[in-house]
Image (cartoon, rainbow, N blue to C red; front, side):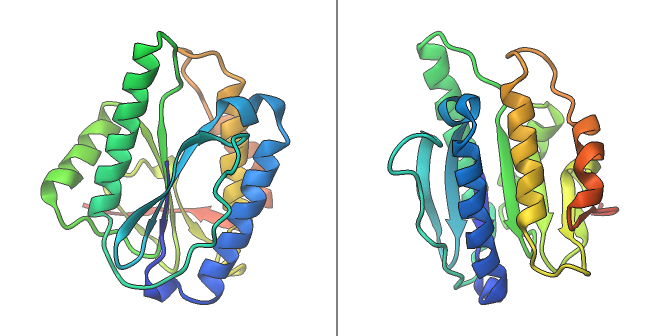
Length: 212
């Protein structure tokens, strides 16, 4: 599940660059035979409200989401995480009903702030991450402090020398998706070596400050 927190402060260059990088990201995934038929993606945007832009589809399905995301409003992450958890649960149930297996889900979040106003939703997210029910990959914009429940290796911020350059983060996500699809279901996926291999070539840095 990809969540884009497109509030008003992301207006202009940030959201324009996100749209460009996102379009290239999906096009690159469509070039890989294994990924385009197996990687299932849904997209949520947060503006003045939370919107499901793209329900679950493989990136090979047509028409896949090509709509630009516009920055406006200032809703927090509560409804988006609730929606993402519901989407994940429904997808797992669907695979179970069809007697098919799937990899551990992931939520990819791009935001310039991290605010969940409902403590029950925050507790649910914290518990599921702790129980290894899904991965959370977080990219913060103009912010380098992440919530405590974010795993350090999965929390990033843009490098100040390359402001609003999201291409590297999406290259990292693309590499992780390729690694996941290539790994048999049920095998623990280790992205550490993969991250080390591409790290020096991407304009993002790991977050080292976490709210307690």
